[in-house]
Image (cartoon, rainbow, N blue to C red; front, side, top):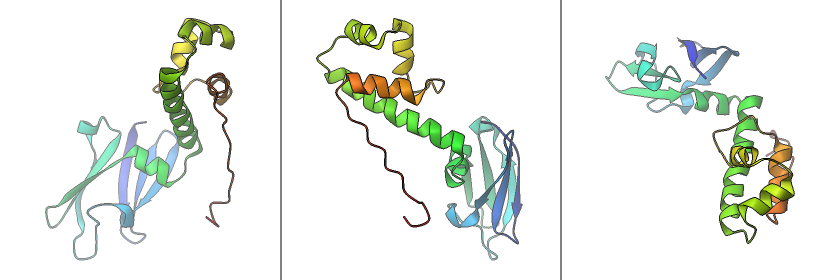
Length: 156
């Protein structure tokens, strides 16, 4: 996801990051190095070297830091990003299980009732257009039991 604009808000001690989804905030407290009243931000820009997927800031002391948009999305618990991370972790687990499965590729494809192309898309961790249902079906065939734990973040 590309960053369109970034500004700093010293009064609220946070960065305001604008993407096509809207504005998200990212506090100074979770950056390294941290801006402070004694070491203020002198330069802030969307970093072309990060493919516009991050921003860089420079402090008065000369120290500089960069923040990737994924860090901003994770901090704000963006629903789309969190869903993508769930699919990513399920895919990595499926890849490990496929390597050690006694079932061959053709047998897994047959049991899933899908095409070879779709099967390989399921195992591609960069593909986020697959569904959790498809991943759970594959993991079930690989003798996995997936349990969901739902808890209130405020009490955790």
